[in-house]
Image (cartoon, rainbow, N blue to C red; front, side, top):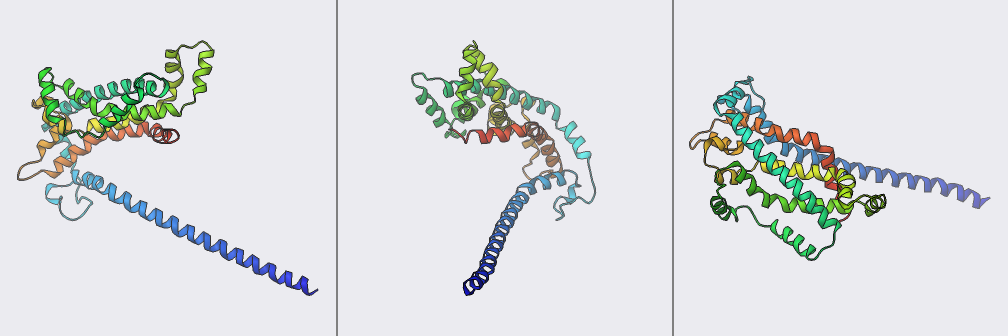
Length: 299
């Protein structure tokens, strides 16, 4: 009888101990999650504040720009009309669109074929060539600025939109090939074997099997290259001297004066300039996330 009473008294004690331990564990998890969310919210606010300040400034009166209030006292949207008319926004926008579209199209096409070849085929010097591509990624653009200027002048493409697009290829191709090679390696070889058994050629395997499955990788490369080319400033300012051929980012720099700057005009122009970047990301964001995570499975 004594043993039964002791066992009955021990059981509630163990249950209380287990309950207390579970409660403490849940409390620690809650504190950790709350801390993580607070840090992420703080980082998000710090990141988004310049964008909010730019949007707010674009609709403020010039005298209210540095008033200390984030919200505008009065909404002045006439600045956008001024940007559209006085800055010849449409022409510079078209120049940027042409250079970006040409650069992205060439890089995506070449990197897709090259990435597939590096991932699926074995040929002499494959690894050496691939590591040379990787090594070129560490070369900053400032280093090749003068040699590229001389090269474009010698081949007659200096001060041309086609030449400017060509100057971006060397910097964009290595990363695109690296990313697509990693993505193609994640796709199972059994798909190619099954297609070949059904009579599909090597080209057919690439076009009908792997290329449709590579859409997340292609979207990732497209977004990265689109943003990089659209926002590029150094090459566009150096290689293009004609005012009518200036890209959008290079033309926006003319708004910055030596002694004073019209911040409302500049903010409105920047707001209009980032609209294509936001639109492209919204259209491809799902594929973009898949493409970023796919290469982590198999390198």
